[in-house]
Length: 434
Image (cartoon, rainbow, N blue to C red; front, side):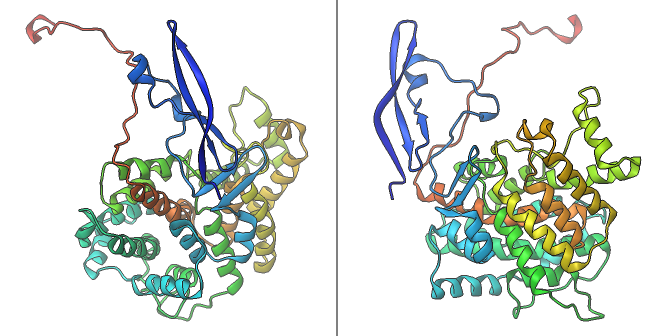
């Protein structure tokens, strides 16, 4: 398959009578971009694109998104097929190594994840240094960066074998760190990894088991957790992924890059959106409103009230991940026999908004954050852990982009330009004269 080509076409930029021919780059799905690499050299000018809305920072073969048509594919595989038929571990391999693994490759990869789930015992003492109120995302980011001190070979220029080992360590140990941070926050003893369990089963066991009684692992719950992680595994050049690529371009350790990605994801406009959905629902319930009166307030521009979990920066159609989770949400709530007024409120909000022309005409369909927050609540995962769950799912995507950029041989550090709007040259005045 032709991953990316350069067409014969070009765009012409005319500046003060001087023409610059800019090649047009075409991707394998027909996406086109104007290559302006020579712009500053030839004209002394740069482009200004606040938020990089119209700027392609790289060429990548990992994920394809068509926001208008509601398409999401990992390495060419539709998200619908992967969510229904694959596992998170298999999807992680696909994203990072570019192909679905055969049985032997998947077994070796899975065994590596099992064998590297333990943390160095000295790291256990680090958890004691955090206050019980510490946000799990802060702990996850800090502890991920701390891993680099235990594996110093990642600092230098690691060979492929060392990179593969670091990838396994990050994928495996970060779920342990996440579970340990949760146990720390609620004052329960840490539950160590169990090598007899699969990736997601092991995580659930570390999260919810206690030494005093057996913990029954429900295969249906394991399946939905697999699905949630798969649906969050990558999403092209979002804020956190761009952050990982930026840090990689500096030559920093893989652990530093992933830690930076976690910190970027923590922002409420990025990974914190599913937490905002539950906070919105709690606010509606506390105010005594119902979903109909709340939506009326949303439509009133004077209130500045936002409908969280609806609409998406990329998708101008129904988020394909949301379609999948909508079905899973019903199955999970039915399976668990959940009778929660907050979840009933969410269902009513969804149903009413989907038939309201105000929201439909503005492409404000439920997105993945709306349903993931509801499912996490049904699974008794606390709100502070919602973004952590997002991070655990996104790790394969971050690793895939880090590796793709490394393997490309690109040595150019990311360094955007700016348009300066500050004061002109000023003369220094001594403090006695100010």
